[in-house]
Image 1 (cartoon, rainbow, N blue to C red):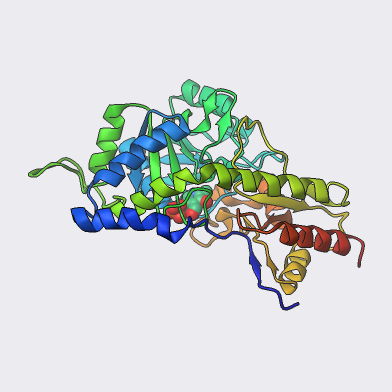
Image 2 (cartoon, protein in one colour):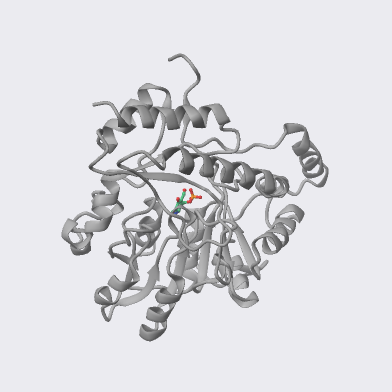
Length: 373
Ligand SMILES: Cc1ncc(COP(=O)(O)O)c(C=O)c1O
């Protein structure tokens, strides 16, 4: 087949001429970073768009995760999921924390709250769950455990931009939530991220930490990092925000088309949406069960041969990478649901510019291969 390859995602880029006025203003002002006007405007606009009180912008999601842990002075052990992008657990190692992996729920592939308590030790200080694919975690159950054991909760909400659960923005749960605005995300600033803070004091502390610990010209209060978002990224974010309704509408349509087209295919399960009142359709994971004629890896390869590049998010599990695999909580016996999901999941392409004909082609390929040996 000689049509152009289709990838799992493609960043949304608004028309270039819409970005030019922002660039002209930066060239005029000559303020490139350190909390310039676009940075301030984006923090304000995101508070309104997301329905949250305080946003601290970052240069990427990983530095935001690392700083969130620093801001809450997390030490010792942190309970987290093996079924995520590797940055979730890496942020713990960068802070000298020990990740303790707990298994996931089969329906949502999020951290299983019923398995958290047995992993708590006197060294546990926090829980770091992930709203995987933008599906909200069981936030109430997790908070209850955190309250009972006096633990902090930091959500890796890298996938959960704009998601609302039963009580409004899912980002308002836990002590802090961390977003990623990487090019592959629903809302991108090329590279970028943010911490959602519950109060002005916490945001101020985080703002100091992301700027080397500087409070004023001569005062440094902590060994901070350089995690600042530049004006060019912030300006792009402001423009991108204007296009969010279209971005979400297109993603929702593609999501619905996949669900409809794949519903009769034996052995293909679409992950159900889990309690979103507003979803962001950031990913489209399918699970390849034993009654589909091909294994997940064979389907992945055959789709690739037809120019359709899905991704096996999340495979391998974080707990299988060399820096984690020796930990007792990384054993397969401790993580049966995550281990199984990692062998079955395939994320199909989903992005605003994916054409209807391309979605149909992907559905048809999966249907056709479903009746072939
Ligand atoms: C779940 C999760 N956590 C953290 C990150 C890291 O974010 P960033 O790439 O912005 O550093 C990503 C994505 O890249 C992610 O998917």
